[in-house]
Each structure stands twice: as structure tokens, then as C-alpha cells.
Image (cartoon, rainbow, N blue to C red; front, side):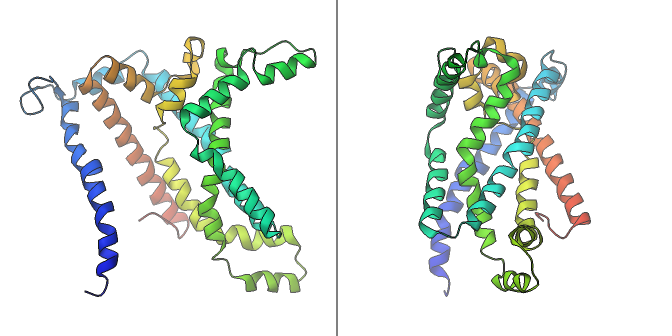
Length: 292
């Protein structure tokens, strides 16, 4: 077989996705059951859509949805363009050693664990942290960043940008390598400066990749990882920090209400599917780029 080694390389990833992505999907059925650990999936009582109705009528429902969507919109506005901008900046650096140094430094935060990043944020922004010490040196009163609900979203998004901007720029740097260098030469001959070349050649050259990444980001509009929020939020910041994933953690895991937690997660997945399908359909009609 001509491509047997390629198939061998694909074997382990395929097994991984089957075992850890598709097989666990069988557990979705407990969202429609009053799951009992002793009885198991096959003998637990069926309750239909009762858990979904309970979540939709929960007093916290709109607050959870609002917080989840608002944080993700902030991420789309501020965090999504950040790696694109960094990739464009790195692409313009001509000194190779400095370019590699910038790339290496920007990649490093990605390899820090969420716990370490949150620890750094707490040390920086606590009442006795570095930022408040600097404010105090200018005669300013300390700001309770971690106790003020109004600051939480900015802190979360900023830490996400710092941690992921370098790693996220890799895909755009790879896309930039596909731009034909002859286009730049032709633009120079026509008298185009660097800004004009970036605007008319570089950015259009990576638009298909940007579109794909944007569509994938829209699919996560109702989903947000709970680890960093769980480590950063406090009682006073619940109003803006409590999201669907932290609610599922408290209700589904801490309270052992597995059926309810599964129902909420399934609800998120369905909404995400609607968003990404709609966005993909619009993208296919408006432009030439789509996921499928």
C-alpha cells in the first residue's frame, strides 16, 4: 500500500478521537434521565426534557447566559484580532535573530498552566500587589481589582490575550508564508509603501484563514472554560464572573446532579451548533470561504 506509513501515523489520533470524543457521547442520554449512579444509564428513570425546562426557568439562567456571551464577545473584539496583529508585526521584522526572539518570548506564556497564570494575576492585582503598589507610589488609592465585579471581564480577557496571543499567531504566520513574494515586488515597483503592501497584499492573503478561525470562534460563543474563572472569581464578582460552565461545575459535579449538568452542557452544544452553522452559511453566501 503506497501510503501505509501515513495511515499508520493517523491510527493513534483516530483511536484517540473514537475513545475520548465519540464513545463518551453515549453519556448524553443521562440528560434525559434522572440518573442514579447505582442503577446506571440503562436502568435510571427517564424524565424527558425536564432538566432542560428546569434550566430555562432557573432564576440564574439569564445572568449565566449574559455573562457567558458578554465575555466571549469581549474575546472576539479584543482577543481574536491580537494574534493577527502580532503575526503581521512579526512578519515585518527583517532582522532574523530578533524575529525569532520575539516569537519565542510570545510563545512562552502558552506553556504556563492556568494555575500559574491565575497566581500571577492575583499577585499583580491584589490589594498589596505590584499594580496597587505602583498606584500608591503616585499617591493613588489602591483599587480592589479582584473584588470589583466591574473589573473581572477586563482582567479575564487581558490574561487570555497575554497567555494565548503568541501561540495563536502561529497559524497566521503559517498563512503568511503562502503569500506570493512577487506581489510585494510588483507593489514596490508601483510605488506602494509598507502600509499599502500590508493593507492590499498581506491582509487579503490571510483573509480565508481569518474567516475560518472566526467561524470556529463563533461556535464557542456559548462556551467558556471554567478553570481560569473558577480560580479568579470571588463572591463580590459573581455578578459578572459566573458563567454557564462554572454553574455546571457547582451543580453537576459538586452537587452530584449529573443529569442536570449534562443537560446544560448539551444545551450549550446545541446553541453552539446553531451559531456555527448559521455563520458558515452566511460566510458561504457572502464570500468564498466556509468550513464546509
